[in-house]
Image (cartoon, rainbow, N blue to C red):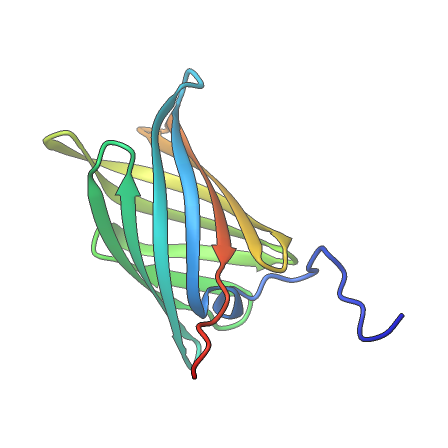
Length: 160
């Protein structure tokens, strides 16, 4: 075999390397009865400076609405800590092999109201270009919904 063999399943998630540059995500919100409530696409621009990762996320939902979130994440070692305008306090995560467990509270707009909910997120590398995520959303400790997302790295833009 010519070249270097690259196993299809990464052994370790490097969150900064995965999100550096452009990526896109497709997802849906599922209610506690298993019904799909919303679908969305996210365009993500990631930049890295030292151990800091900044993710600029632009959401487009199936009902025509949009949203923006900018994460600032400290990715030193196997632990991660992040902030965004709608995150309450600090998001905390732990990387174990190809997976990141990520927990935070978010002020989630629903209609004209805003609810403080807890996210318990598991993100796992499917292959070198794809990251899968399943987040359980809880309110008062009760499971309210899930968010399923597939992130895909996009090729770097070529310069003439």
